[in-house]
Image (cartoon, rainbow, N blue to C red):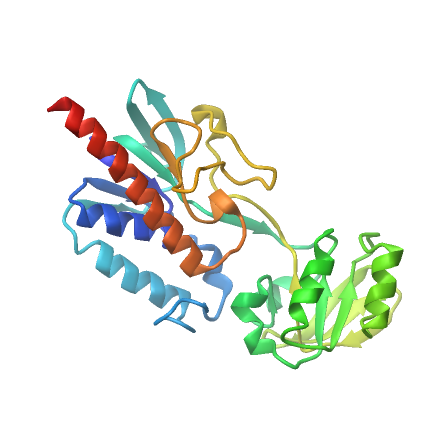
Length: 301
């Protein structure tokens, strides 16, 4: 019987485990070792760790977290969570079951990339999702913005902080309105609606965007808007509410709409998707757990 089960070993789950381990709580951290940033050459925006390789960040974090004897690390995928009274039973893909008094959901998101031939060869190397994470590395370069999302205008406006040489490709969708098209044209930003057939380049570095009509443009990098969905969803069994963006609804400290269930990291707020933001979210959720455990323990005495 653990005090807390943490589902997900990204920065949110790891920081929650660190806070709870230091508070002498018995914690089990479930982690299937499939981080979303595994395709990225480096992670940015985390003070003292700017440019760190994701694997190295994870190694350091686990070393720190597991130095606390009350924290256990299970490299298992969680397949089910059931609640009976005030106890949560967590089941894994290996058939194991653990029980805990509280649950923190921090499994993050999984990305569905646009169905464009060759895109996986460049994603995480010269094509990215987050300008804050990777805009600096692509500064002043000719970039492509591939998106069929209504938020494409916001991304273009944001990217102008890093490069003025932008081309918007909607991959055949009608996501850009006539008014937006005119605004982009006034800034020298063309919009191409022709479907993309393939991307080409060498060693993960983008060189050309090819279209279905046989034409192409030369670009050295770009940004996309992948579809993001929770990596592990337990809404049906636990009954928590979700937000309009698909995240788990929480209060400011990470408490969900279900007593004893907390959420942190990308799975809670979806965006912004940064290590430091997720880690802070995990810390807050751990403190919310400690606040509730403190009151419960006081009443038992």
